[in-house]
Length: 191
Image: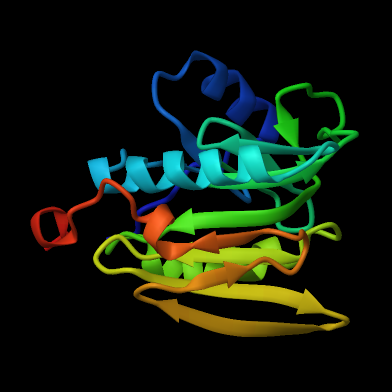
């Protein structure tokens, strides 16, 4: 049996999103609900937000899960876990609640989204001219995948256990021990 999926215009998406009690991602006409996070996920977001917020000088600002990002080339509206954007903020045309110019994006990996975050989202994010750095942060062990743009190439580094992540876009190093502070991986690991 053939199932047809309704395609929504971007205007319809924004009208629905404003009234929605949950966050939804827009991907080229389709609206997909975004799942809630775990305590580990939320602690990692708070820890990364805190580290970046206090380490980055002006004109950089840090945004978290409720800040929408528009990727015009892919027709995607999404909510990254953490974004760093340099001022002046650039907005989607006609909107004051949707940004378009992140430099760094971080996603906290979960079993249901890890593949999409690594492949689909990363491919979409790379269409953003200002985007230069990507962090994928594991919830089940101290492990961070770090991608940064050097010229036209993306460079990959993996950080395990106690390490210092040197961000390429800013003079900031993030200790994984601080990133994973207050998380008991033995008790909080996802199944």
